[in-house]
Amino acid sequence: GAGVSQSPSNKVTEKGKDVELRCDPISGHTALYWYRQSLGQGLEFLIYFQGNSAPDKSGLPSDRFSAERTGGSVSTLTIQRTQQEDSAVYLCASSLLTANTEAFFGQGTRLTVV
Amino acid sequence: AQKITQTQPGMFVQEKEAVTLDCTYDTSDQSYGLFWYKQPSSGEMIFLIYQGSYDEQNATEGRYSLNFQKARKSANLVISASQLGDSAMYFCAMREISGGYNKLIFGAGTRLAVHP
Image (cartoon, rainbow over all chains, first blue to last red):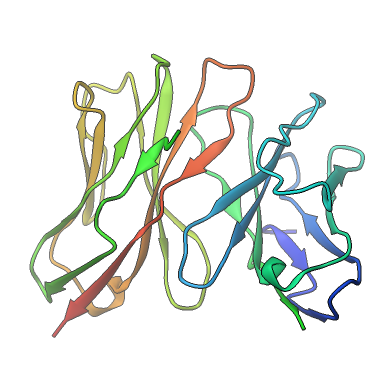
C-alpha cells in the first residue's frame, strides 16, 4: 500500500478483554514502531522492531502488553486483560533503517476500554 | 531520563508572524538525527523537517527552518509567516544512531495556536 495502515481505526472493548491491534507498514520498511498517545499528550514509546534483530521492548508498560512482527512485515500489538487506563490512540510508524529518514505514521487505532 | 524536552506546552502567534518552538535534547552519542512533526486536530502525524548531528547548515523546508545549536543541544523549530493552518501540536523527536537500536523518541509537544 501507499502508506502505513492500521486496523481497526476504532475499538471499544470491555474491561478485562484482550485486544489485538494491527499495523501494515510501508513495503520495504524494516523498522517499525508502536507508540501510545493519551488525549492531548505526547507519544509514549512502546516497542521498536529493527530488521531481524530482537525488538526493543523497553517501553511496554506492563506484561499485559506484547507485540510481534511476522515475516518482517505486519505487526500486531496485543493487550491482555485491558484496563480503563489503556484507553488511548495507538500509533504505528515505519521507516527505512537509515538513520536520517523520517518515520511514516498510520492513522492510529483509538482504543476505548469501558 | 528525559531525552527530549519541549518546555512550551502552548504557544500562540499572530497570523503572518514568525514563531519559534523550543526543543532541547540529551544524548551522549555523537551521531544522531532530530525531527519535527506536526499533528493537526485530525490526529495524523506529518513530518516537517530533519537535522543530522553532522550537518553544518541549519535545515530548511519552505516556511520551516531548524535552529540547530549543537553545543547547547537545542533544535528549535522556526515557522515563518504563520498561517491559520499551522495551528496544531508540534513534536520534536530524536533518533540516536550509534547505539544498537535507533528508535525514535518524542518530546511532550507544544500546542501552537495561530490567531487571525
